[in-house]
Image 1 (cartoon, rainbow, N blue to C red):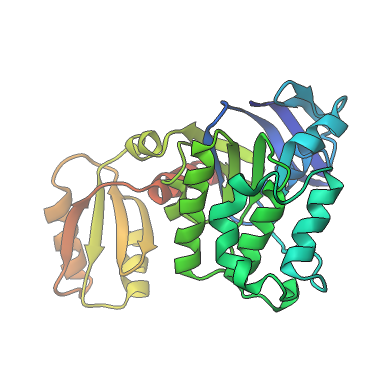
Image 2 (cartoon, one colour):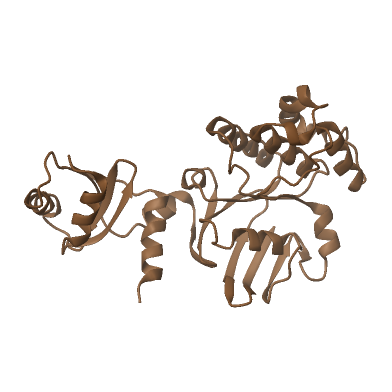
Amino acid sequence: MIQVAHIVKSYESTKALQDISFDVVQGQLFGLIGPDGAGKTTLFRILTTLLLPDEGQARVGEWDIRKDYKKIRKQVGYMPGRFSLYQDLTVEENLSFFATIFGTTIRESYHLIKDIYVQIEPFKDRRAGALSGGMKQKLALCCALVHSPQVLFLDEPTTGVDPVSRKEFWDMLKNLKRAGITILVSTPFMDEASRCEQIALLQKGKVLAIDTPKGIRKSFSKPLWSVNSNTDMYQLLQDLNRYDRTASAFTFGESVHYTDRQEEGISEALRQYLAQQGHREVRIQPLEASIEDRFMELMSREDEP
């Protein structure tokens, strides 16, 4: 449904996208995962025909982004990261406006937006600018779906909303996928990556890896350990980074995720070293790698000279 081949895009001296390639099959929920500045929004704008790439090709459905931009715009729904609806119009007026643009009505697409719209219908006469973050999110999704698109592009749709609204939103995406819509979603949140069927990890305009969430986690290259002590986190991290056996050490919540340059005697040797540095109540436990662990590992390789 989406084919991206060797896409390159630069803004003056800044390389926003560097040789990006991936495929999204029909009906798939595909995630672009990466921090701000990774190139996610630039790629979305190219695929929705708002920008032209400097190099490379891409197709959405059977249409080429350069030659068939008018057809693509009729067949895709796009929800940008920033709320971009008309804030002075009411909920119902915004929906009616976007339906009219696409030559349809709310009634014709109601089967697709019903489960979402019923949550905002009590506020249908409220101006969009006066809605909460979660309600704005639902309204924007309804407007992106009102013309029954084949492909849905969602650029960081849960940024700035509460955890409950984030969960509700991803539940809504599952229902849309069951309706046969192909969904490409970007997010900086690693916990949301596991909700996708396939993900691409992006950093500084490059694809670091493409796989299923399970495949990404399994590709972590070394045994991983969770390390805690009675000392503050900063001191623990500093001491681990000075340890000559340390391959990597990153803070994750209330512990440090650690990998060792050697394969044997990791726990006891590390415990002795930390004790020499004045750490007490040292806790070292084996750990299954997360998507974020793998992302950090790949990022560190990119930063190596």
